[in-house]
Image (tube, rainbow, N blue to C red):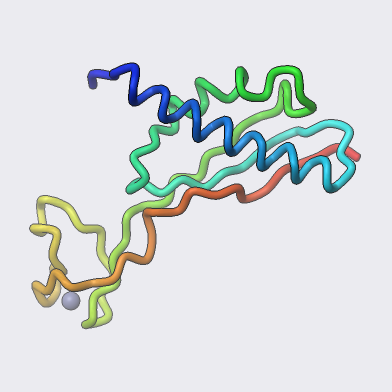
Length: 122
Ligand SMILES: [Zn+2]
């Protein structure tokens, strides 16, 4: 995979945003030190977990998050069809429901991008 500078900057700015959210949560809970930060990233967001991991140390340097672990929960792309079937759209099924062939399903997972938890030391 070829990585352009633009794409990696994208991860850096999102990682900085996640780190700020985690820091705010830690401060609100009067944390002395943060052990781990868990975030949820849907596969449709286009964010690459490896890059988020790569940028994590530099976005938390000098804060109480420094030295903590970043846990990334990747959420799969899931669509719920009107027929009740839940599936992952891909080229193999033509991005349509493999049961009834409809492509009018509702996306129920894959766009998430949020902070799940912050593990702190009080
Ligand atoms: Zn269906």
